[in-house]
Length: 395
Image (cartoon, rainbow, N blue to C red):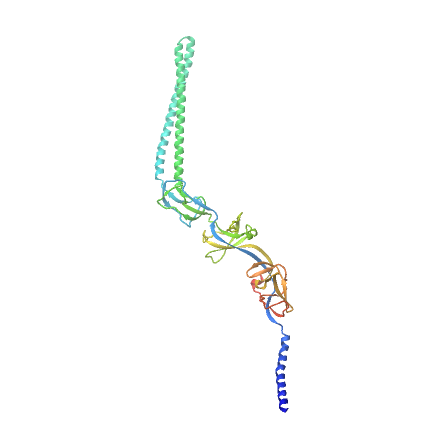
């Protein structure tokens, strides 16, 4: 009995030794403030929404330059790919040998025509004088016939002479008109030859940048050739021809700002929407948007580029994108009030640079959990610690 009592006493002492400290440890757990979470207050910030569009650079207006005369040999090239040319600048020259021979022949024909005109004018003057003399002779003969000095036969002969003289005058005038017409024809032929000589200089119709050159020295230039001698980007203007999904087309307007980054560029180029296609591709459901870019010698047609079209801009309350959660009911955030977590339904708006605008559901004084995972539930007790606001967030 003594041994049994001793054993029971020892067990009771051990039980008290174990349970006593356990109760002492439980007291601090009941007074704990819970997990420490990082929170932030919604900041007022200017937000922009962008739409990604990709495509290739192209010349806004491409001019094809071909020969205006054919059958002549190209003897000189004065411009090459990449050159900036002015309106009227000579790009290439064709041979003029044959035209110079034709011009010399025309000069001789012109001199001959002028001589023929002078000859016909002299003949006309002679015929007019003969006509005047014959008319005077008839007048005298008529007076003399009244007195019977000359016979009727003599009078008739002089009247016939007047008619012959008049016919010769008319014929000479027609010959003069023919000579003058020949001279005009020679002058027209000369103008044509001179025009063809001018066109042996291939000139740029507009200022721009040469994109391609298919001209070769020594080749015979033909107007029926399939490829032009030169292709020029008018005024060097380059556009991005981008493709946009049909659902986004209604949100795009002419004049919207675009940040375009061509392949190989480290910094974007500022552009703006210049033209929106009137119809979409039925197979791809995409529409074309042309974005005007500033003049830049590094922009080359055919280069791949991506553009961010600014389709929205306004001020609003924003939070980090990681703070917004989604479930079957929609979007919500977790806010902390007096150390207790609560769900708050929100409506997301514009998104930009890792932040999202909350159209309604929170105020600037709310403490929103920055990154809430599955470990937080509504009603949990937490210790909120506000995140440091950077200068960028404060804007």
